[in-house]
Picture (cartoon, helix red, strand yellow):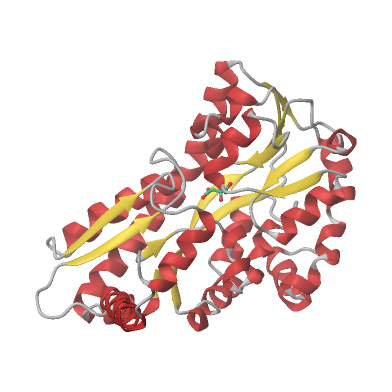
Length: 336
Ligand code: LMR
């Protein structure tokens, strides 16, 4: 028979432990930051995390220890957000497409197809008012946003050519958990399917999904090119990250130590954002060289054709993101 007294004790212990894990460190205690992420170490995010670890440990003279858990080793996409809120890990850098389940769908702004022309455009948002206002929305969720980290622009892959919008008709396409991405593929006549990043390779290999979109770096490091015969370098959308921490944990760190961590984060951010473009270019070239996938570089005419189909997604999804936010973004980007 279930002993309710023991259950109550066990629950009490668990609650104490959970609280303990987010409580501030006192005196000279060592502070451990568990940084969980879903991509390979050899990616812009993976390398950014390593750089943060190196600098954080150096600037705090070892008072802070950063443990990095890449490749969904600890948690998959959705679970890692829950783990952060519970204090089981302290730092994450989820893709901006994954904040819907946290109750901040406005980050899906970054998923709007064909919104950013290039990285300079992107900076106007991440380094401007729009980006800062978005970050501040996390506070109410017990989370603090520290920085935006780049990955890059996406390519489309499948086992049949994906050159014109018609080519997507009926294809099952893996997406991140973003309603904007869902709408994007619906506009193309495809069947979007949310799938955790760690399951993408197998999903494609076994035919659970037919194709996907991702940055060259993610495509290459997950060996997706080995199970996709065709790719279009379309740069139709963007993947980037918000580096986030458990707010109670972060604010509980002694001020002087947190100051050093802020410095480490600022420098790691510059580094991650500096290498991202090149990491993606190198990955793209490596996949072209590998020869398992036939690459098509989108022409200007094709871009115009995609734009016609995909641009209406902005208006259609304005309720989810907020018409004002879209307007503010257009104005920052100089879009009429
Ligand atoms: C994806 O799920 O495709 C990406 O968000 C993975 C990542 O973190 O870059």
